[in-house]
Image (cartoon, rainbow, N blue to C red):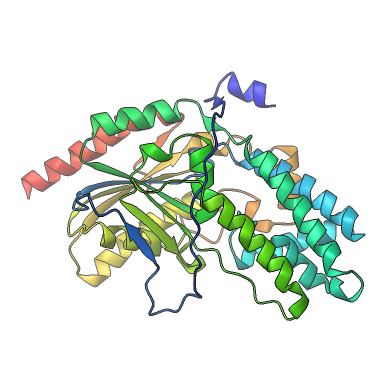
Length: 362
């Protein structure tokens, strides 16, 4: 199916090189505690033009990769734990709903805890299952691909729009996002990353301590490989900031000092990026704060494989995967839609020019 898709849609680029990032021990989020932030000390963050780019299915061709990885990994896990794969998939869905879809760090321990397998399995068996899961993740993550033209287009935009800050705004965990950007070679082409903080699960049985410690060490090892020194922003946000909430947009705008200016958010889902833009717009209307114009650009190519058989199979367990639209959300304004990522510079030029004209008229 991939070859058929590529005849009329943007292709995924081959991957070269793999880096990873340094990991920070994080604390539980409290509503009055700001997320931890690392800001590069040498750069001036007072730009007034910001592009917020979704990662999965906007830059990386993630959907089918995700379905293949999860279905194969849960098949192995079910075999090792002598449990039906359907039960494992349903429990993975529960874990994903409690964290984020691409949070893999403690997923095996969380699934085993829900199954109460410590009553019939040794912790060594559970640790072995976690080790096998991580081996598969490590080998499969190397295969993740960019859509055609992403690397070249990002480089072009950095030259064409010198005042534009390019920030990744993703619901993936920070460690996954940074490694994914490193594997694909595009981390040096962005100015910042705003991703979800990885929280260690609170498991009742003390025997899980060794399992959790091993997993924490694995994440540490991955994170320590990636240099983030060039990043203007590196935001580690609580899961409640995930899209469709506009909290991530608000945080980025605040940290960049956008008293006024233009924000463009680009992603594949009306129900996530589109709703985040809409909520941010509504928040400004009701707050009376200085206005930042925000536009939503939909990456239509990111939905090319919604009906892929493996993805449809997985969506039977994870209901949120059933489509990019939802009856729970009203339609949102779409400033533009692109069929390939390399169409984005032209759209940016139009939107930024329109915003300049509006400011001059005012």
